[in-house]
Image 1 (cartoon, one colour):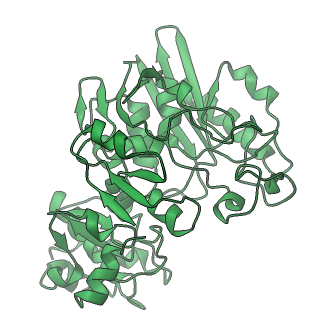
Image 2 (cartoon, rainbow over the protein chains, first blue to last red):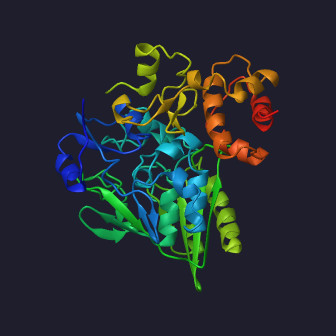
Length: 277
Length: 129
């Protein structure tokens, strides 16, 4: 395997595609390559070419979660989502850009089952072990998206700047289809460079976990209030981060037999989040 | 796949104080510091370390935390202890008198299957004694 160290974003994107992958913190990509779930013959190290740090409302995609956790200027929902994500070492290594692109923790997908998301015919969670799985958008694939930070940015209405375009963070994600099993719209040779934040009047992120630290979300709820409008987004409930257009949408959830409890947890956390802001 | 920092530390350089338990970035046994930042050496590709300074448990042999871990009997089987000390050293460098909550937050990425957490917490709380 080859490791490239480009000196500009343009040089980096020129080296991407055709069996190469961008490497930032490596907390997700290195284990996925070792497990054979991602194939790559070349890694393009982007640590030195992607912006890092916070300037006003702009966050460099190479900023680590540990740096954001300590930043008193960013919205509370994002700070709380970073502080509750992963472990201290993973937060010190992992970048916000990489966090948005992490794959599901679905054990069938992670164990390399020939499941629907991997291009097969069957979602094994539907008739199998499913307590960590989805309650929305789950008719083809019942995997749950694990990013706390994505839910926070979705509620905050953040936008992304990549090497190609600027767009709302909601447009980074797509429900996979029969023709295209990807869960993001990012091109293979496109890099996230910056996140542009909004400034809410108040915001928060609440997370239900199996233990109090170092755990992926059973349900994460981000809420942000802009004047009279409150935006709510959920982590861990669908194959992609899930924007809740209204609280009533929770009544339209389609849980599997083993995930109904997530709807009740979401209901409680949404209520608490709205009360908190 | 390229070699990990943990492999090179242990197999090439003989710094076997750094332990590999899960080997996939979950348990914290392999924690070293890169420029003072706790980092999982089992999922760090050695070629990405660059010019950052690596601190392993061998570099902390005279740290007062070592004596605190012994004094408070915070070691049972000992396999996770190097990683625990490396994480704790970064914590007390930034915050010499951490609270119970701050200790639990900063140490949550170092698992101990013997369950010595209360004594590890005591060692860090009293490391300057």
